Length: 114
Length: 112
Image 1 (cartoon, rainbow over the protein chains, first blue to last red):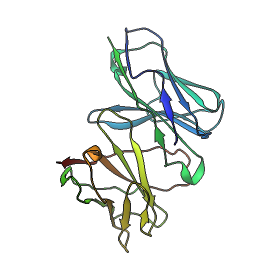
Image 2 (tube, rainbow over the protein chains, first blue to last red; image 1 turned 45 degrees about the horizontal axis):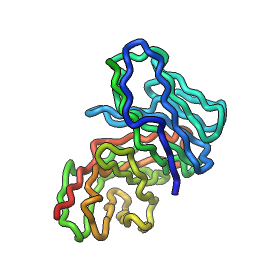
Image 3 (cartoon, rainbow over the protein chains, first blue to last red; image 1 turned 60 degrees about the horizontal axis):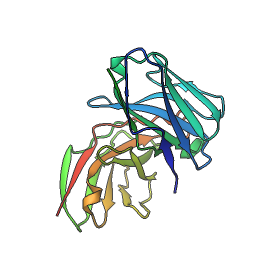
Image 4 (cartoon, each protein chain N blue to C red; image 1 turned 45 degrees about the vertical axis):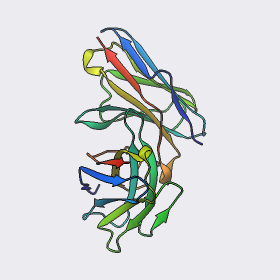
């Protein structure tokens, strides 16, 4: 079974803090994704990566950065957390190419910024 | 990417088949139909996908009409754990990003 794990299920941070969200997959997938999900706005892609040290911006990269130093690990960084970054953050992974849309998701991290 | 239309909600009795429809009348020849679901407070889960032939796996069956303008996801024996929001997505699998876009989906309530 594909397993995607995220470092925390729930996280509470203060405005201005630097926040690290980590995602690890164990299926040797090339692609990894960070999404956020908000009521009424659906799923929105923040960043994705198709290889180690490679990253591509998604639809809403502002205020976020990412790091992929190893194939199995993809980190999302909030440089200075703000209240509008309160959200559910979902990590996913997939193979490349024709299987890119068969994505396996982690359980999500519900981040609250106060 | 083709737009999809799904009913906002459906009920199903436990143990019965759940048939979830999706309309994608503007689908193009190289677009696949993907289904995901999301159980409350969990990450989305990939279910199945297909191009034009019917597909079956351990979770569900996917029936795509001959003109490909609509499809139906079938859960053959629904259980309470199948209560979730089900999303139908149409994408070209060779596109670069792999970005998923979920619409409103269908909330399936399986009742005892």
